[in-house]
Each structure stands twice: as structure tokens, then as C-alpha cells.
Amino acid sequence: MARKSSVQWKGWGNHERNEAKDENRRRDRAHPVCLDCPRWRREKTALLIANAKYANFGSLATPVKEARELRDTLKSIGFQVTLVENGSRESMMEAIADFEDSLKKRGGVAFFHYGGHGLQVAGKNYLIPSDAEIPDERRVETRAVSVDEIMSALDAARTGTNIVVLDACRNNPLPAQSGRSASRGLSTVSFKPKN
Image (cartoon, rainbow, N blue to C red; front, side):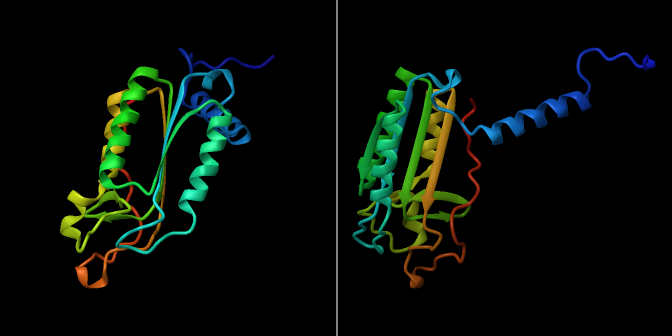
């Protein structure tokens, strides 16, 4: 018979908690998110924005095609999907507002995907509308869409689960003579929904 420790645990100790977390991580890696599992059988709402044809920046080959494929896949697993193709700033902002309103009514799972040009200025991330004319970094804030707009919408909607995918080019699309920063790609998103 094993000797009992003289230390009595009330509940789980750190070791047991860590083992349980490790087991959950192993299980989650073995079983990726299953959107058809009971835990995920909730309302599911998606907003996809795909900008490929730009008036003032280089066009991109894949965002619209990939977004259409993603739309079809998400619909097949029960998502209500809105797809904005080659959106202006106004249409992107309107779609984000409609997305927030829909999430407030439906709750459940929120999925946002953006494909197109993106950039960061002073540590903030921006998505570039298809009709944007941005000659330099000073005009980015008023002519692009801040990623914080999406994060704020998710925060206000208070959905149970939020998935955000930003598939943006790593090259800074601003003209070289614009005084652009040398940073490539987006920065870490610091604004996160509270839920």
C-alpha cells in the first residue's frame, strides 16, 4: 500500500491543473475545432471581405476566388455568410456595422475573414479598400479601415466565440516616395474582444 503524503490537497494542485491543461491541448490538437459538435451547434455568422481589384494599388490574384470557396464551405456547415467583393471603404464599414447588428441578434459564433492589401502604421493595422487613394501614411487612418473597427464590433456584439482571419499581403502597398515605414506585414492585434 502506498504511503499517504502528509500534505493534504484541497482541490487540484498546480501539477494536476497543468496535467489537465496539457491533456486538453493534446485533445484539441488531435481534434481541431469541430463546428458540428454540440458545443458549436449555435448560430454562426460570417463576414468575408475580399479585395483583389484596386484602383490605386496592384491587383491581387486570389482573394475573391478564395473568399468564394470559403463562403461555400462555411455555408455547408451552417454559417450565415455575407461576402463583400472589392469593397469601397463605405461598403466595408457598412458591412461591419451590419455584421455587428446581426451578431447582436443571433449571438453564437462570429467569423471574420479579410483577403487583400493591408498595412500597419504606428503599430495599428489597416485593411485597404479597393477604391482607396492613399498617397502617404498620414492619410491611412481616414481612407482605410482599421482592424480595431472589426474588433470593436465583435466586442460590442458580445458573441461567445470570435474567429478573425487577416490574409493580407506582407508588402507595404504605399508608393516608395510616400515616406512609408519599412515595416512589412501587420502588427500583433492588441485590441481583443472582452468575451
